[in-house]
Image: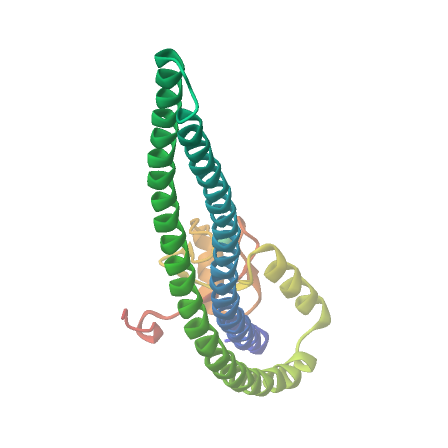
Amino acid sequence: MNQEISKLIDLQGIDSELDGFDQEIKAKEQEIVAREQSIADKETKISLLKVQTEELAQSQRDLKAELEDALARIKDRQNKMMQVQTSREHQALLKEIEENKKLIKANEERTLQIMEQIEEAEKNALELANLCSGEKTLLVEEAENVKKAVSKILARKKSVLDQRMVLIPELNPGTLKRYDMLRQKRNGSAVVPTKNGICQGCFMTIPPQQDNEIRRGEKLNFCPTCQRILFFLAEDAEPADA
Ligand SMILES: [Zn+2]
């Protein structure tokens, strides 16, 4: 096989490996972002629950004031009962006392509901706070692991980049330029094999005459459809399907 073709195959291998490292790093960093987001979401919920609890506590105070007013009114009407002369006046006062007693009953029921709601909100906030604190501990550990993993990946990347540095000067600048352009346009894949006369980049059929040229491997060939650089991968050299 032509030296330039085999070097381009090596370069594609190196660049795909480098892309893989970048994706690995990105995925690791994404894990941290997801954990941070999960903590932030819980903290937002805790804040909302605190606001809710404060509002409920205010309602509780309002209800207490209303209750005291109603009790005072009952006491006032009871005092007045001793001074009234007519049965009509007496009845009117009794009616008012009854109404205030109803108010008190409703007030007490509502107060009980609010107490339960406060309890529930406080319980939820506490659960979330516990979860948050656990997640924060995990995040610190995870961030440390990611840091270590990323520096390992970067070390591997460095050694592959060194291989690339050695290879680059051995390639024709015009071919390199074409290769780089293809990598940009074709999602990182510029050099692909053909299999049974089909480009493995775009899966279009190569004209038979060009396929023969590719099999001979004497000069650079480009896919007529996707323009990728093509090479022939002998059947017995193909990796076995996993
Ligand atoms: Zn193609």
